[in-house]
Image (cartoon, rainbow, N blue to C red; front, side, top):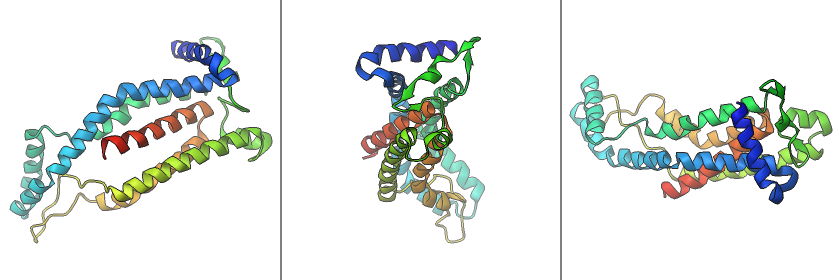
Length: 241
């Protein structure tokens, strides 16, 4: 972790002439952008995979009609179709999974009072009046919701709400594609995967849960989450247009 802390410190030193006392916060935003840039090829592959799965829907509907009375045969046939077309149902998960190490590293770094036996100097850095190692509860206890640190969080909440609203509108306009594996029925049309309908209804609201995350994690981690979420919203708008 000390190596990672040194990386953040070096980025902060590099950005200090431009951002002054908020250089460490800017370093975290830059670090997040670099992580997302590295993950971008996986995001592009996920977008291609989703478009390919959408293109397979007519053939999957035909399989549902053909194997309506044999659910096991239907599932095998759909899996064989995905294999034949080299489409992975799990490709969309890879970009998120690859970001988890960076998230947990930041969380551990800004939740620890010491690094390598010495004090954690990163905790003294701030975003304006709010220390990067503090949480929203600390801001509320210090000066209240409209105190100096509380106003920083209100600004961050406004950004999250704007991004979540953008995602909500897009999710309503571009519905979640149906999963490829269905359960045959006597009508021969097949049903979507159990629970997918409920998931489709919940998906547009998931972005708003970022508000909870930002409120409970250290401010440095909140900056990572906000930057990554904003990147995802813009990336999806481009890749899934």
